[in-house]
Image 1 (cartoon, rainbow, N blue to C red):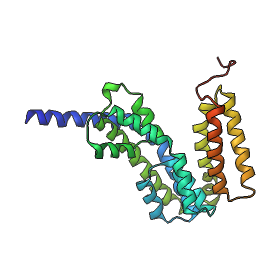
Image 2 (cartoon, rainbow, N blue to C red; image 1 turned 120 degrees about the horizontal axis):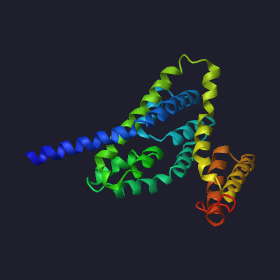
Image 3 (cartoon, helix red, strand yellow; image 1 turned 90 degrees about the vertical axis):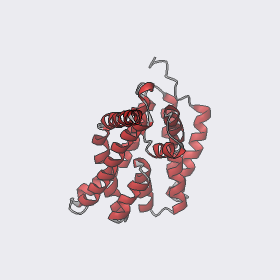
Image 4 (cartoon, helix red, strand yellow; image 1 turned 90 degrees about the horizontal axis):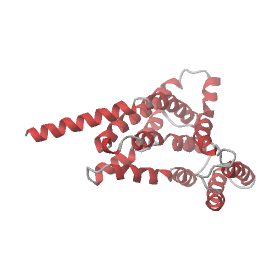
Length: 241
């Protein structure tokens, strides 16, 4: 009995440690969640659909992309394929997180994989390995998930009274998010920067003779394949060194 009580106490401490580690995420997730919700409402989503998407998907960049593509009239197949490609990195990140989680069954590990985002992955994998546990990650995930859903709900509420000009300006949040993800990797890597520019130009050219949603998918796949042979993401240019 004492052993079970001690184990429960240990799990609670691990969970609270994860909650504490995840508190800074709130500062980023709330405003971006608001921006996503306003963007989704502008695209024609109802308030319930907007929040339900955050509850079921929990992927900010993908949700913004899906809302933007829906607003442009993209079909369901194009939206699903584009968000799948964008989220391919989660396969690797989830594998890294699950490797650090030694306890729990398959169901709990799948639940943890659902909570993997760029932010939760970065926080969890930079902790000491001996401090990493299933309950630590669940605490971290709970804070991030609650902040994202709360931000979405706030955005739905705010969309009813924010001035149209301000609501429209929040539409650039998706581009700001992608730029913030992209820029750190471009530093000191000229080839990667050139590939990004080529991808943008290639996508623009494809958009002239095919739907923009499919142009985005085609340019992403082609340029990612090109990057395998053209770019070393870990290589720094000589001047940077």
